[in-house]
Image 1: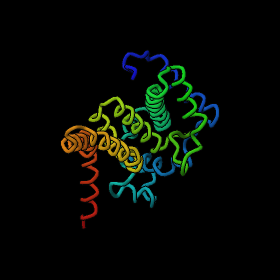
Image 2: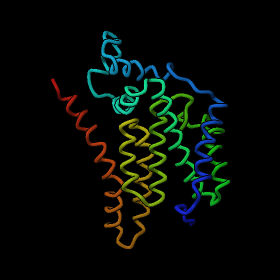
Image 3: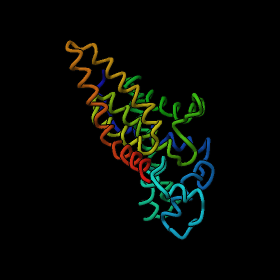
Length: 237
């Protein structure tokens, strides 16, 4: 297996920067409508409580913790500092950068060739992103919570392959704050793969327990506040 830590960052950056440029050329870039309708009105209200103060949907979101709370909390400080559209574009660019680097790293582990890894990254993120089971694509032509979640989840998967299970678990926990289903979709196979690998160890019982703790405990630690908040909100009068 190659030592990817010694590989040049230049091909990785080429892949991470080339993929979004080609994706934008193919699919364009959009802001302010469609899937963003579920979080932009709430974000507007949080930045200026006088806006949409009587809107029913915003009122429901404002009434308690919901599936978009983590995403809006991530976006709100940037939007407060530079405005909504620049903040949306910045987070979109960061998601692309993380996603591109993570996919390149995974491709490099498979192909052993930087050039092939660049080509594979572009193919995965530009040529094939719409050919997915159930339409659950890694990328989008606009900022949506699922794309941010997939960028974190793919980074977690890349780190797990490198043997950095604890950091991977922390990132999967952070993913759950943005999109719980994405965290589950990546985290469960990662956990199962780790447990299967540990079962082949000489002391299988201890190895399985150790692997389970290394992978699951960091994620659970990060996700715990969500569970507490949901529990409190459901038991509140």
